[in-house]
Amino acid sequence: MSSRIEKTFKELKLKGKSAFIPYITAGDPDIGLSQKILNALPRGGADIIEIGMPFSDPMADGPAIQQSSLRALSNGQDMKRTLSMVKEFRIQNDHTPIILMGYYNPILQFGTENFLKECNLMEIDG
View 1 (cartoon, rainbow, N blue to C red):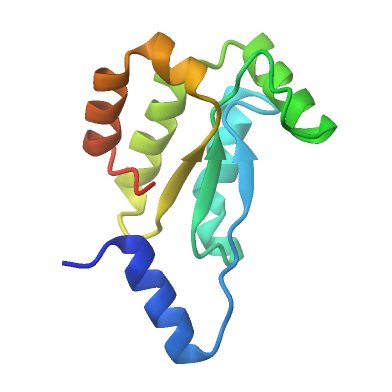
View 2: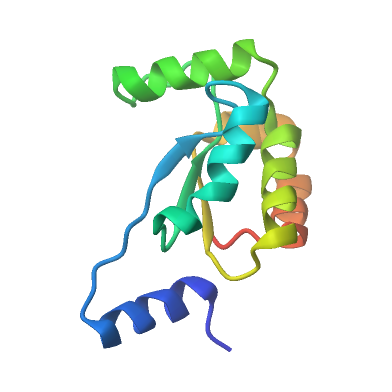
């Protein structure tokens, strides 16, 4: 059985197209609007969606992602809410691949085993 990511790339290759993979930081600019943006991305042409897991010290990222993480955290975004965003998204969309991006620190704090279990339940693809 092929993954959603693999299936998406195969379909795009057959059409001679490149993938559009937008990135958003979960919870930025606020939790409600972030969910609306996530839900709307496939209608805007997203083939795969990358969601940033906010972290308090995103030193390896540029200023835009650093600032978006800090805004999200100041609005109460955490790992549980990030995973809940995907759960809400999956209610209406079970075919667009979701990839989480971030640092290991929030995963470690959430609990690695718990994180992997939740990712499986929320049907996160990478």
